[in-house]
Image (cartoon, rainbow, N blue to C red):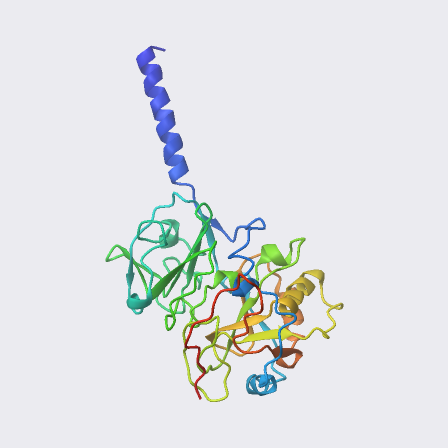
Length: 337
């Protein structure tokens, strides 16, 4: 082989390697290998086992309905929220906002504008909530992306690949620095009605079936809401007597969990220590989790339905605890009548 030919072969191999690296696909429902989403002092990760009970706890539980059973709003495809892990060199693409452009982030802090939406999501199901390639045109259609190199979270709602216009569209988008306790501006939504991030509030398979304890709260919905309290930043209703966005429930410490499968005990212990946060309007006591074909509905459904709203109590609205690093609340927290 001549030196010139050898050089050409080397260049071709190098180019192929570079192209292969750039084309590495995102990982769906990948394990975060123990990495903490947001600091330990963040509201999602806050230990509320010693928090005081709200004076209107019984009233809020009565509004929901004490006999209302918990329901896992997730499971095997197509139920639940998919999420993907992407590398820091995933191309950032622009998104056209169709509803909440004035409250959306055009990109993540410290990086160029755009969201790391992979080409695979245009033509393959599994990347967007609802399990339709390109997102389709109905449902909430959330897309959740974690840049594992920069440790950034990107979330969009109402996501749709508009092939005729050759562009991604979404009702709105929010980005979060996962090393920070930065909160959405007061009055702003995110891709969740409460203005919170979605991913850190999901029941994830890798945690439920892991070896350690789950150390964060879970996201859940109620049929109607009334204003908002910290840590929420946005309201989506004013129904008298209804829970506010950001309200947190805690599974009573007296609830005996010994009869549940080990994986479900792990999930329910997190409800006792970190609780549930009202994040959106929907069905009462629907708990959010990931779309993952490893979930077994024959395990999930009986376990969740064995708990009712009466097994929970409401902790003091807007409670922040005494952690020195706890984020400060907004100055105009409100609950409307």
